Image (cartoon, rainbow, N blue to C red; front, side):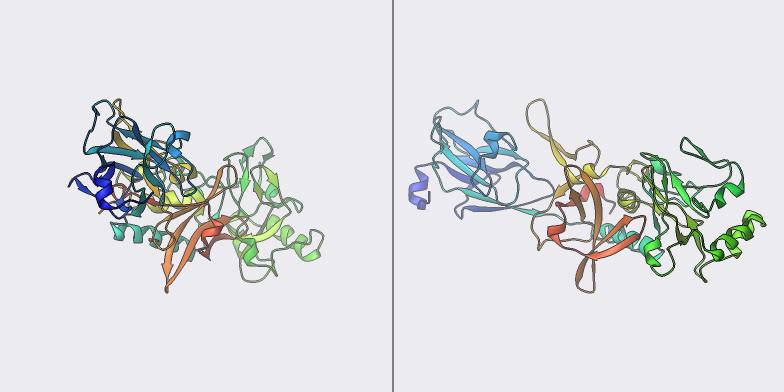
Length: 402
């Protein structure tokens, strides 16, 4: 309920804790790289029959349901305890603090709306994340599930746990579902595997080589004379000579049966994976961020959920002790203001689990998402539509190099 300043003096009221000055406007903009308020907002003259409640935009009590934590020094509150600091964790933009009567939860002062303003310092580091993503896009890197940017056969990814996850299918290749003992095994008309990279993350994955970029050339007639003569020609040559023989023009496309998590798809003509970086959506994010990661590039290897989900760390005294994301090693914060967008923001899609992630970039006054889409298309760049993404997060300043 709204009250005048004179009336509020006789009631509980919110204060800016460092200065002890009352906040009369009913709104407070909290500029921070976290969703935690610690010793920045307090409450004055909160009697023993009064309490503090945090509610969302719809008026649902978040402190009562446990979706957020709200702590303050009740132990030292005796009678009228002026200027008591509040600790609020995991609040969202637009949440409202209320001083309320116990039992009825009726407001006992002017509610205080919290506005979250995300920090976006270290802009050069954020720009470098985007520049690295755009470099992969310009080089037409391939999408291969479970990889993070290495050239097949090399160990040149910056993401430590996936430094060499992409490899070429060559004689000697052996997996439970497939074995290649000699070069002719790569030339099976029904399951060709020429110039294809693979990974073994969550099953066997074979790169599709951006075949959707060639809609007029990618399809294969498995019985065509031209196709069968092409394979026969390769049988007569040593493998280093294969790249000199083409079947569908000058694009150096090679046939392969591509796979995703073990499932086999019809053969297509696609770009050769030789010399092409292989990467998936989370691999792209980890590779690009690793270049400017303050904790060292070898430590930048997170799953999508770690970039999207957050948690506040409290010490044994229930005091704020840090801000981390779900795996306890990475730092991001959610950004809910659609007008507050920065290069290098991360966007994620959720369908019961976090399954896709991309990188925000500005270009020519527009806002786009660079993403490793799928093995059929590789890396793509699409206009940013907030409705297409479940969450946007921002890497904390302290996690990026100056």
